[in-house]
Amino acid sequence: MPDGPDTEKFEEIFKNHAQYVWRALRHLGVAEADLADQSQEVFVTIHRRLASFEGRSSIRSWIYGICLRLASDYRRRAHVRREVPVSQPPPPKTDASASDAERLESRALLQRLLEELDGPKREVFVLFELEGVPMKEIAELIGCPVPTAYSRLRLARETMVAAYRKATGQVEEGTE
Amino acid sequence: MIDKRLVDDPAAAPDGLRRVLDHGTSDVASDSELADLARGVGGALGIPVAALLGSSVGGAATTGGAAAAASKATSGLAGAKLAGLLAVGAALSAGGIAYLSSRSDDQASSPAPSGQPALPTQTPVSKRAPAVKEAESANRAPQSPSARALPPAASGKAGPAHAQPARTKPATASRPSESQLLNQAHAALSKDPRRALTLTARHRKLYPNGVLSQEREVIEIDAMKRLGQKRAAEQRAAEFEQDFEASPYRRKVESPAVKEAH
Image 1: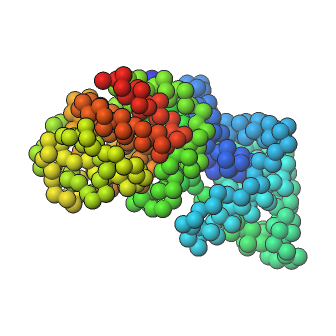
Image 2: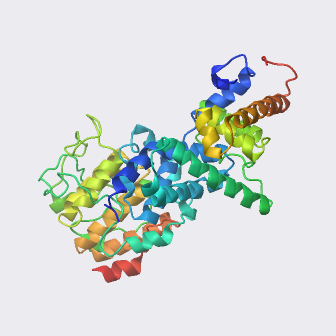
Image 3: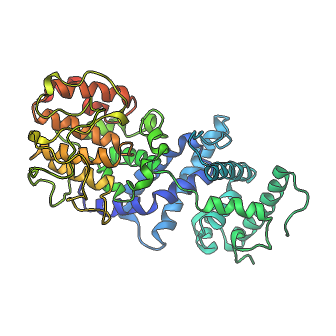
């Protein structure tokens, strides 16, 4: 159905949101090797459910909702398989420049830090801190009261700061 | 009440952590990763890859080493894992490449002008170029996809060896994107396969290691079949299978299919 009624809209969605989906899934715990499959699953789901999108939230929030559910299922399956989804290093890039190398190192560190968060805190932290979704929308997406979402964010921040200091050997740095 | 993100609030976290988060906010998939994703999604849903990518893929950045490394499906992130493989096979009915856009371009089906400026004749590395005229005896030595040559001009009417500014609708003033070129090439396939080869030649010139190299190969093989270059097409198909072991297009180009198709 290359030219169905929703196809053009779907194509636009892919163009506009593929990067966000890719990044959100990575931060939500999908392993590097599974990112393509899981991203594909998100877009197949978007395609299937697009007709039922009512526009009550932004399309991006709606897509994040799909990402959250798929990533949550993924993490659960990974747990059952006793696999650690995000601990492997990013694939080596032999032609990586110095700044690429820094980015890859930074990406790996971020993944390690995020692994310190449990699922609910990780979801709030990723959506707010990395994707810039407003807290009210986050609370709606994950189905909890806004104060609960804030509480998770606060705890997630504390965990991330502590994990960062531990990972970098810092006892005191920056401010709190 | 928290009202700022950590990246915007120096007082809330160590600078190093804020830098890590800042990198995280701008972390993006590479062009090759996006192309692999588009192949999977396009294959699963029967939507043209180039239509999904639009002009977002195919700029200068895609010609770099990372793209070259990823042009082999076996090394691509998703190459071996595309869940839509079967759907791709089904979508690729004989004679059509379902997911290179069928929407078309105004110039795609127009005849190739003689002396098409974008069409180089041949380069020293030419071994796998789809030989438009003497295909039967051509092309034995295997080469890497990136070393393949530009196809010779249709009807032997070659243009100058250096690409001129695109006469096709450009993505920018100076050069069309990978997606645009291959959309046009695909649209030209049925009516004017020589024109399709002209356009793939231009794609090869501009994007020798582009992220849509697989799509270019598939179009060229299809065009060669349509031009009756059976043996050359079979040879290219075999080489494609070798070069892109995990490609979702293998079912399209595999030699038996080539033999049956025309």
